[in-house]
Length: 342
Image (cartoon, rainbow, N blue to C red; front, side, top):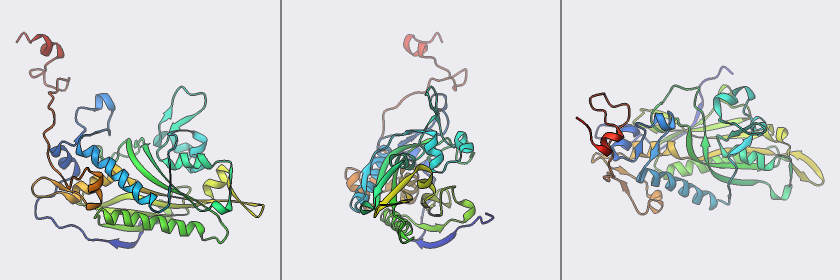
């Protein structure tokens, strides 16, 4: 538990070299006017945002590109509920004492419900108290969902898309048998290879990191993270993880399989295929050009309505009239509608 540094298993690609000043994704996105976070706290709270035009298109393009890749690899697409009983969160591995700091609880319900921070929770609930015939294993599922995270435990990245309360994610989830003792390990390795393929096609430079025991979540037997290079942040940061949970979740949620009239706990594996907001950051920062545009990887062009670059497109304009204006500059809605006495 004293280990703090992961072991780099593989380095993929190289850092991109720029001949112009490097900017972070907040500067790039605001200049292109595809991201808005200003003047929102009073209405949406901190760490929220709007994606506009090409920004919203890029989010959807990443999701559709990922789904097309996974379905070509025989994943079954599912949708899951986002409102789940707290007992499922605990069964899936979220400690009861950390629920309040990590997930949003739903008030006014007869029993305790919360908003899922990942579709892994809903997929665990789908299989809870179920017996699966061995012939159907392994099951490979993918799911797109909106994920909700409190992010109250961190003061890092208060602006931008890196740590936000709501984001789009495509998740990979697997259920395997445990006959040879290697089935879940093999599926875990397959999920990591898919992640690498996805991010290589996106043109990213990244490290594949075997995480130390001290950094594993409660359910994970082994966890491998992929950390991409973010030029605007001048550092590597996580864009995905893949965890082999063996029978931690299945023994708590009673997920079993049947073979020859005998029953065993199944194993579960989960992995991020696309955390859209973090990939948007990586693409904006790595694709920034000297002419203030952003070049897109070829694999996304079909999902971006043929766009190969993101460039500034003048949107509609608005004038802020809220209370943050100084007293001399402050204009009320009444002033606009009926004229100011000044």
